[in-house]
Length: 607
Ligand code: AGP
Image 1 (cartoon, rainbow, N blue to C red):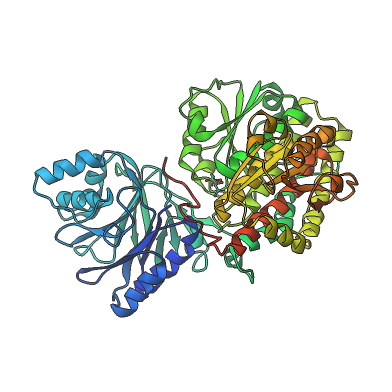
Image 2 (cartoon, helix red, strand yellow):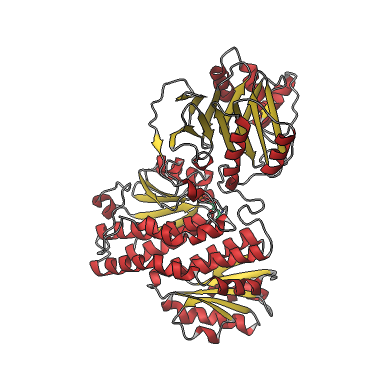
């Protein structure tokens, strides 16, 4: 999704902007550009990776200490030099970058064309530059206010004009925007990691607000002009966390961070007897006892974490639990009520569909608990209760450590609710707590078995299709394993409940077809093995994820990746690690851009 940078201060703006844009690369993009003011407005932009823009800037440097920058992820108009941001008005006196979608773009464009405006790009953004220029009467804030009053949709819009040097004006409607406060310099960005190495003090711009940025700081008010008092947020993340730290890819680094992530997410939140202390979960025991049903909503990997959550809540709490893709739930008139607790899961806390589903749940009277990795994200700010995953910044588009942290957080939540409802007794709570405390060591152990995973990756490298099967919690993990593989290796893969195979997909299993089976659920072991037999009988190549003391599986599987023995309820945590590594190594061996897979964005902030 698009990335935004802005800078006002004593330094040359272009290198600062470029550096910030590079740190936003994880959001995914197809072109990049920067603009500076220096008595006039100069723009450089290029389709493709930021290096192309950097080369352009080497050839034609920009001079000026106030500037804005952008990485674009195409929505209106193909990726191209011309469609890349920034965009100017025809006179070149106003320049904008924009993240989001202007929904009434066509109507606005036609109206402007009737008034004689010509457009150089196919973007919705260029219209905003024209609108601001049209509305300008000597006051940029007022011009931006009047311009955005005409625009419908989601945006973070950042504007500069040569008439008011030393100033950047930005407005936010839905798409994220933050301000970094430096010493005699101020930064704007769509995400904190862009400038975390430059400052630790931030202002979060909320929906419906305008911010005016100068070298002396930032003033926030509502778009309507009401003053806003915003507290400075101090962020403790280690800047090192946002770097690759010696690994070839962020994804591998993030996989290897998982033992620490589990420890962090559990840290200070769980007593040995299974009592959970969740600092920002504010509901009391009465609420925990009384609500009737749980809804979980999310997209992608976060949805898969929700599938695990459903099973955890079903088993531990015996509460009816529904998991819905957020993009489905927002339009399917869900039967959520004021007797519900809705858990919205999102690593970024900015996924547009998840935000919409969460808002819908709230409108229907549900209490909203946001399970997110990003402190201060929109999802966290709109929630009644927040459960932060503490995974640190996740840079790779393919989510790994955030997923694991989401699982851990859901075990904690189940313990918190289960103890209050009296359905998780002391023995069970202590058993789960003990199992959780072993996980960092177990995950660490798995990371030392990478050679076995590489051998398995070599086996499936050239497959046309890969199938993942499992039952119950294993099926939930299989879903995530399949998504990981497809998003970075570009191999076609599908996950399904093991029992479903014989109802159709078995027709696709022929000699050598790889089938990956997850086998942590002991109660369902024999049933899953029946499906494995069906695969074997058709010549399929079975790769099993099984406990280290499983002394049967070698009879059925072509190869086995062993995981440490755990309580079945906690099995998914260890089982997903070899699947993440498998996806990583298949993609690496196939020579792909692992951290930024084609067509995908880290944070999907449009519908
Ligand atoms: C995960 O590997 C994917 N990149 C994607 O499915 C992601 O989980 C999804 O877009 C949801 O993102 P969120 O957790 O930030 O809401």
